[in-house]
Length: 233
Image (cartoon, rainbow, N blue to C red; front, side, top):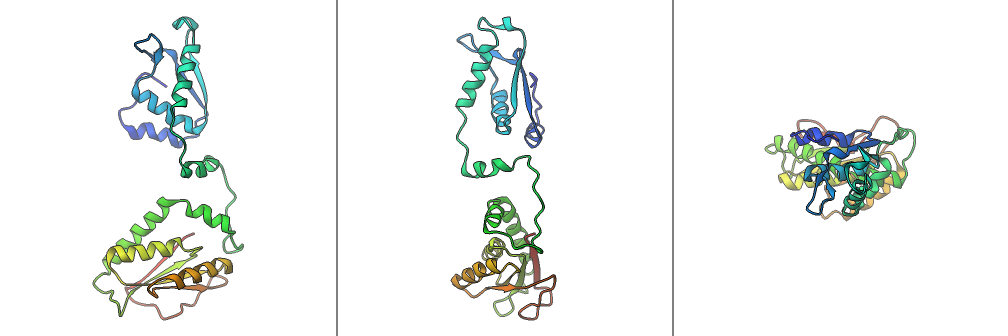
């Protein structure tokens, strides 16, 4: 760390996406508080706590005579900062084992994914919020042509356990656009979950379909500008 941090917060936050393994903090950037002990500025405190989420090693560099207690005073202060960190949220605890970790690619067409794998996918709220926003934008473009008699058709290809189906239905409600959702899935175990969820819907606007291979026959003819397909893969 240096005494001067970039003014652009995006430049600072970019480091949180890097594989940081060591943080070197020179004793010279520490300030002195009212009690005569070393302390960091507010911005340095915030950045230090954020970097500690990456579990790096911390090195305090400088002369041992910079304080009457030596560099130990600086280390004690950093430990004090860490003790004040808020506890990890359930989302952060779930994500932490996946940081900077290469995973074997999944083969959903070859293998039937396990329920635990679907659960891992569904822990990503940003992904499904963006899907919902994209579907809503597409529905708004077709709001004039979609009616209860001729609803917009959304095919979720590779629906898994149904989070994209829920996103499509939420987009329909947000835009007041009638839709007919087809959840297409090859995993027979996931299809059962989709069928149960479809039966629980108050309105018969969602239907689960199973298929094998790379071709699927729609349960009913789909054509025209009211057709939209989305994939969860």
